[in-house]
Length: 275
Length: 246
Image 1 (cartoon, rainbow over the protein chains, first blue to last red):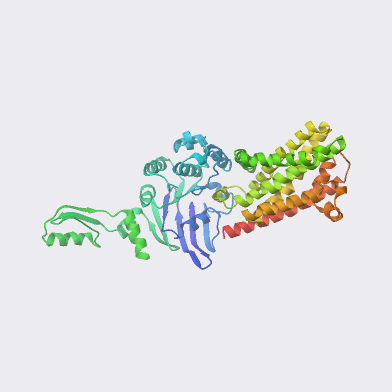
Image 2: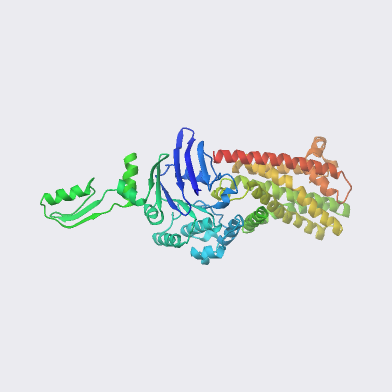
């Protein structure tokens, strides 16, 4: 049974078609990134998975059950939105409350330790920086030891160092059959964390596969060399042919490199090509 | 089991959040006692009058905190991202509803308790231990319809409107229920509708502790009101849910 299953899901808000015939799955133990420009339908998809919204047609399943069913959500852990915390509460108090919702939660102390939150567990959330609040939010998604973890932009608002540390934490977890579905604006995050990438744009799934495949299919290789007039960088359609032509033209050059496309370039090329 | 654990944990969270906002809690708790000191204390010269006045103002205190102060919180909080997160947790919304009710009553009990303490010190109030215990039980259970009323207002009015709307109901119902002016001194129109008001029924319930009265009528009325307000609050909740998460 799939951890997450979207099957021919459509949703419309008045004149706007938010999702059209969207199908994808997340297998047990898989980590999947959901990418797409703003307004592409990522949030709507997640809201359906969290039981907040229901599809107009098609079905969304959470471990084989409907997300609106509270018992199905015992298998789900999610992050609160960005500015979601009551200022006066402490992380430890919120975590204890969240743990009370689940049948076999992890020890709050252990989860906080694994996310480097032990020192701030007893401070009020209003006194914590945005990055720390975000880390608390991510930790909360794991407290219930759920089969499916949904992280909505887990590292937004974090500085580069905290972001990299959180990635380390997430990668170091022995997740077993725990699945993670996350959205992000940082393409690099998808490359580092995800087994698979789903790109959604204007309500449709445009790509569903490995990040390497996405790079190879949509990215262009970057060719760089130093010519007579100084350094040259190019993003040719066909890098092999570009290099062949360069050599045949007998123009002097040195320090030739052909770099694999970054996921970000591939993503921009792909969504740019569509809009 | 699980529902009980969530209920307890959520009540605790609500009360902690309240306690950390003293600028809200202290005036809310002091307000009914202040009214008691101005309007009742100077006239409570005999045990009989003091008992009745104290019971009226205990009722006034619980109604105030539960309906006007606390229930209105729903109107302000339902738009918060935090509420959105709570909905994703695997608990039935009814459990959170129930936690709100008992947290409101616990908070109201502090406001009512302060009235009782002041009355006990400064007036010839004379209740037996049994009567005090009955008062605690009646006051707590009888306040349920007012919490639900407050929540109904919270789900049907936006944050701006909820406060004045609750305020109007609070003051009119307290007056009409005979909590400020003894029932026999009410103007004729108010005296005519008074027996049908939840505030009057709540008053009757508490007054019955010191003077025999029609308790069955009061219980019946409060139960009916509780059901009506529960229905209104539930419909409001669903309505809000549809508007927010179509």
